[in-house]
Image 1 (cartoon, rainbow, N blue to C red):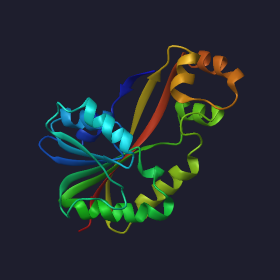
Image 2 (image 1 turned 120 degrees about the vertical axis):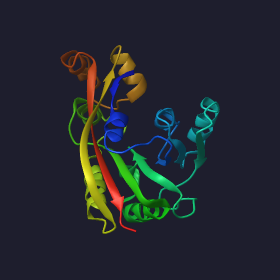
Image 3 (image 1 turned 90 degrees about the vertical axis):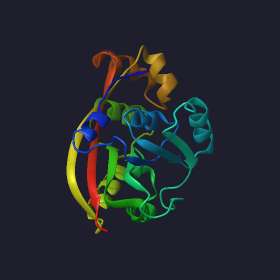
Image 4 (image 1 turned 180 degrees about the vertical axis):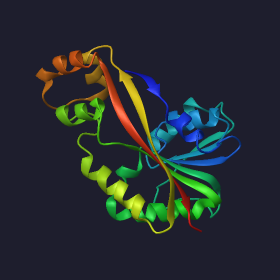
Length: 217
């Protein structure tokens, strides 16, 4: 599997600058996006509750002096108030338990500096990648309910003022059905995989939504 298009960073930086800014990435996983942010000139702290993912990120990216990784949860951020210019949820907000989403936003606002930004990069509801997740129960499966709750929660929070909502797209290319099975681990409808990927020329589109907010301090 290869990402042949991933423009979220260009989309974000067309609206705000990240150069020389302090950025907290919530849900960094193994650090792929963290390092992209660091390469864009930001000083980035990536957090994730998965200790193994954090260990791998620290091992793989130790050469980057402007990127660091530590364990942490979105609803209990281990940082003092006004620590960051930007807080970015990278495809992570819809994974937070619904009863903790408001608390996670409260925490992101607390650690954001005055005149800073809170940004949500979230999967949208359309695209062949998400069709594959649903049809084959692959990767994260059917997350439409979680996505709807996450979107409604961020828009309804009383201390977030939306500045922009942008669309973005990530394209994934697969070498074969076996390649898809290795990375995405489908659990059903295996006999339909060949036709699905032939129809899509082995390239799947994941539509993203980027919501940029200013916190009301």
